Length: 298
Image (cartoon, rainbow, N blue to C red; front, side, top):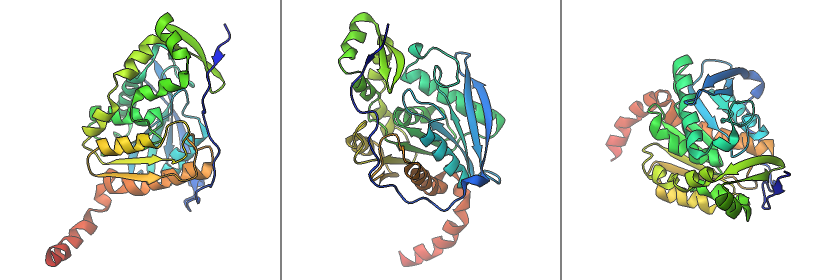
């Protein structure tokens, strides 16, 4: 059966590239890695490392039907590494070079895969202090944070306020999936089987509830002209979350951050913001020194 195409934008043009940061990605290095998830499947990963000792470890979650090798993902991970973070990016089960049947996966299995990735880092290196997620991966890191106690900060890029938002890309085929139990769809030019269990799972994900209960600093980055996940999703996430929370507008970028300058800019912003939380010891002496002055001026 030839999958029927699904209408709707999967990417929009970049209108104005953001300035490239001055850090040199050539000083970073990447190492292949692999780990088992809770279902015994081997997930393919890449660990991007800084030139020296890492400031902290970060875990990256890619977008729906994407992979760790999407150009934007590579650019973000390497730019974070250039800023001192060691970043583990991996393919969710059933995607990229990872084992598993995509049709049997859902939002909950993605969250489980993130927890397994964190366990791998904890065992081999150090548990992730920073979670970063793009699009549906952003919703997934919000949901996963409660299950990774070492996480100190969470950043999302173009994330939906509800996991069920992804079903909008199925168009009229959603009714077919619900009625027949499954359908073969063309998503971004590639065939995927979507089953009813996926729709049921995303419907009950409760991303906004997870954001409200996050209890970690949250950085929300979103492009105002995102035609795939509207910027109103960022507003809903921001409203649901508690402080400390921040929002950065990725002006001129598209949903997939197809312009490398936009991906690097997003990573540079995340790195600067996360340094306060993911590696608080770097700022502790400055805060201690400033404390008497604040007391005197209060």
